[in-house]
Length: 286
Image 1 (cartoon, rainbow, N blue to C red):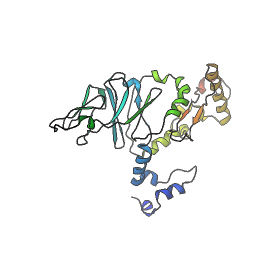
Image 2 (cartoon, rainbow, N blue to C red; image 1 turned 90 degrees about the vertical axis):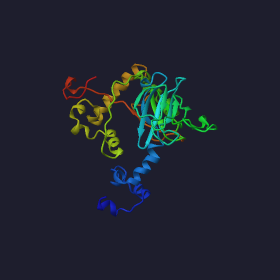
Image 3 (cartoon, one colour; image 1 turned 180 degrees about the horizontal axis):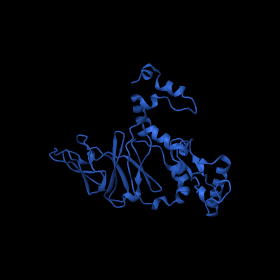
Image 4 (tube, rainbow, N blue to C red; image 1 turned 120 degrees about the vertical axis):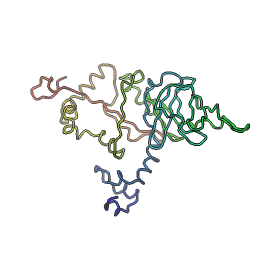
């Protein structure tokens, strides 16, 4: 730990209180293990995590495993056709039940002692247990699973925030892209040797786009000045309304979610090719 961090004796509450609006977080928010533990407990485990798309699990027995921080969940389409989630932890000695990342099965078998669970999480085989052993009391522990217009979400708390507001408010903008009937064409995972907040912060801002991603910046309206961008976004909104999509924000962040619900956000940004605009000043023509 650096001398700067060793000399910083402020509590977490004091760090938060000292945070200046509009400034980057204090260094300790990216390096302090106590802060990381708190983030896992307060943020990661209490919020919904995107796990995939319903097209990835079309048939009963299709499953995938989601690993987040120290938690692991099996998401499986059960016998009834409904999606279910279970902690990927054997009820016997805590071994991982499923070692595969995805696939199809008619049962989950713990690789340690061979306990067997059906695709609805019910324990149906356990060797050398006493006669009064209650199989039903040792089923896999459930994990919260829900779907927002085709997207599968998992939450590792017994009392997750409600998704009803997000489902309702996002129904029309997500229907524009037919989210429920999309298919996953490819999926890649990248291990980032950094605090998780860095990648999110990098994604959430495009201040770096002009210098770090010049090809992308050439066709992204965020690189325009405010007046031109407003005009291009206005043209896109007019086209949306002409297609029957009305009363929808182009950019919306639900920073004040209803009590007990989760916040959400979405953004639709017009793209253009400035080399095909035909305009004298290089601004896009629509």
